[in-house]
Image (cartoon, rainbow, N blue to C red; front, side):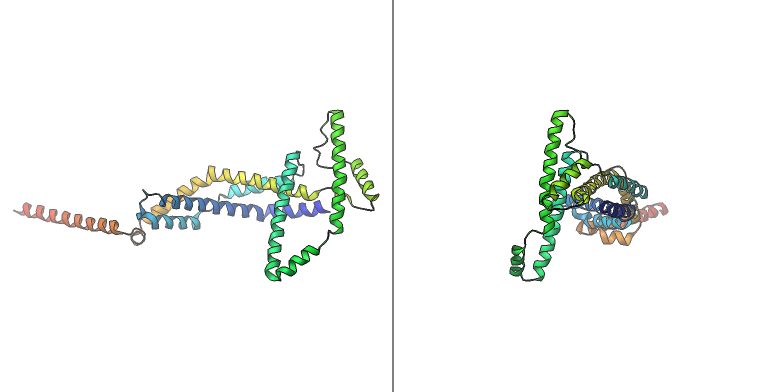
Length: 285
């Protein structure tokens, strides 16, 4: 069934690709923010541009050197698997949030597909085709199912008011409710399965949405508590490596002030030599 197939696919995804993809995105975001911080500093009127090349070279070196903490990857894999296994939508707000998420994802996918079609065929022919389309049988069935499920919700609300219970927020239909809905639909010559009525799609998108929220929070904490400090240490190591490379320093630190500083350094060295020579002459006398 739908749930079994989805569970298998989600578990395979969570065990292999998902945590690696999320860490990769977190890695890119961290280094993009690091580069953005430097670029924002460069735009300030008080900024000294002499170190521009050096700083951007450090950023590129960090992009190639920085590796995410491997323990964080294992931790992420565990919490993502747990989040995707949970099917219990806790309340109405979460349910409505999941439906909105599902609508947004499907709408974007539809817009993308329509854009692809419009770019490949005559626009007027495509629009004419869309205009002539009628609702499919499945769409009509779903519209009738919605009406019957609305009746179930109304019955739950009436029952809650009578018994002071909280049945409206249950995200599944009990057997009596399923039987009632199916009988009402059969009276309209509509025969559907239990899966058709169970709104598995909404629960699926809720599981995805919850996993995304938990993952975002975990990545944020990893960046704040671990990765920022590790990146700072890497920057210091990179600068230490640069300090011993005279050719690299000459290439990265350029400009009139650098040339002037080098000239002053040479003048000072000559002056020191002259002073040593004069001192030696005085000693001989």
